[in-house]
Image (cartoon, rainbow, N blue to C red):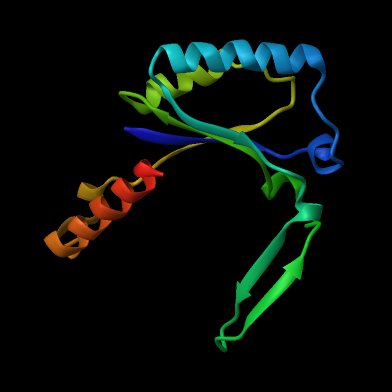
Length: 139
């Protein structure tokens, strides 16, 4: 099972405050544990929303681009991991070991797999998906 582990933004991340050397070292050690255990597939931090945009696909079909920053910090993402684990419970156990500060919020969401889409995900669509994933992996 794959899970996206979402690191929620806070006032510091939105202000562009970088982590301390101590936090970077602790996170580096934690990431090494994830990699050695075969859990971590990807992981990245994100720039503040002030450097981002949102594209609103309005009800009338008109696409509107809105520049950041965005007001609701609690709804924003500061970073993420993509993990391969056996269960949601295993993902929770891993995140409990992460070196986060008091008050930080982490969200864990399961990633859809091909079988989750049922009959609507036809053999042709599955083949297309597999081809695209192979192309990405080859880069």
